[in-house]
Length: 113
Image (cartoon, rainbow, N blue to C red; front, side):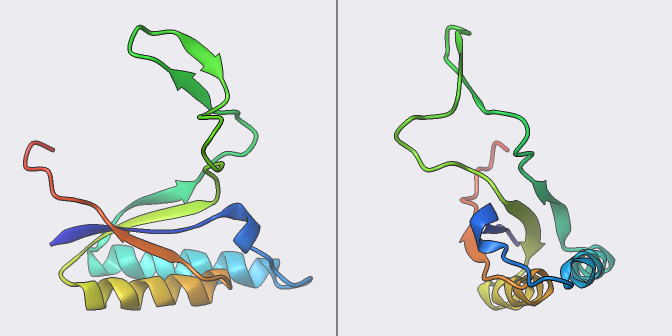
């Protein structure tokens, strides 16, 4: 079984007026389905109100992330699934619930993790 990251950037979440409550309900429902199916690992969203900090190996801290990288924001769900087809199915379910396309990535297996 592999772990998959299902995610979207904050800018992709464009919810028509009056639909926000339905999106919240539907997105919570699909996560409950994933939990009931035993495939949910964790999920959440980046707190946009807390700025990133860049921490070096020496322990030095600077405000902001990598200046050359796009910002990391939005919502994330990690699922453990038996196949790529199952991952595509769950990503589609999440996309329907959130009303926006989802990016799907697989985590590389590290036997030490």
